[in-house]
Length: 405
Image: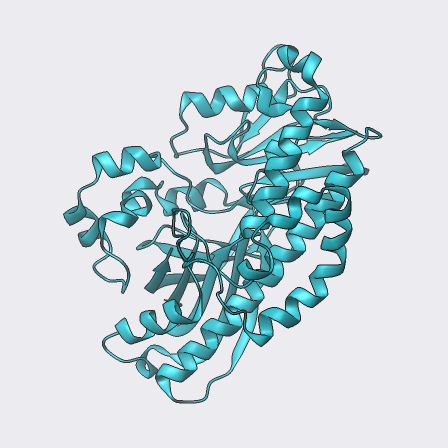
């Protein structure tokens, strides 16, 4: 048994795969708060990348029956990973990778411009044909959402499709153990997903106004099955998760096209690892019962299922195969997990330290990405060791180019 159990009064059991990795006390308290919700099914499963989140910890698997917590799903609904192995080898790449990074930065809008009246660099000014075609498939169901919730009409939806965003989102070129070139990226449902998540979190709090004082944390406000917003929320989340998946596909196509343009040589690509969410909810069957599984910073790891566990910029990442561990609700970690908040990282890590930690990667090395420096994250090797009974490693990737917003 590689997990630790925690049992508190008036709470579901908590099973934690955290051997050899640090977990802050505040995260443990959030886990206890979530475990005290009356509709938790069996137990909470906690991944080794666990750290404090809004309402509930990032790196947790929350199985529920008869209710759902919008803040546990979060506001970056459908955030996840996509990886493609190309036919290119390391020798096919130029010695200086700046041209490749620049081409990807031109091909994929990234970052964000703050301030009224300023052009947002993180959105398309004129949407490409591929984005328009993808939006056409998503638009009818979005229109149904807007009819019920008109405020969602004025969100970044069409113009954010195929864009990266900020924070820990990235596009990377990596090499595997055979020096084959991979493209890997991380993003979610962008502005429209954030608006959907935020709106329904507020509705859950309003709906429970008289009962909020009885919750261990107001961000654990929930919709009960049969309540007026329950089905609407599930439909909205399902759409946002679809948007996130398409968002990654469009970005991947634009990235591969940019790479081909720089190299000026033909290559093929194979999607070896699934386009997988790690902030989402879906119906699944576990322990012979149909339940809702919310993975807040966790990846599905059904037996034989491929997934992606990235390290930080400058650390290695992994393509994994699920072992179908029932006790984890067939899940694994979604990354390394933070050991420093963004504010702490900017205070505690110097620019020189960041530059040294990313010396082998063609990436930004300025003050604007200090909050994403490798030292802000847990040791990815320790995280992988702690979940050896959840996944097996198929490929180990090392970053050589990293584009951040």
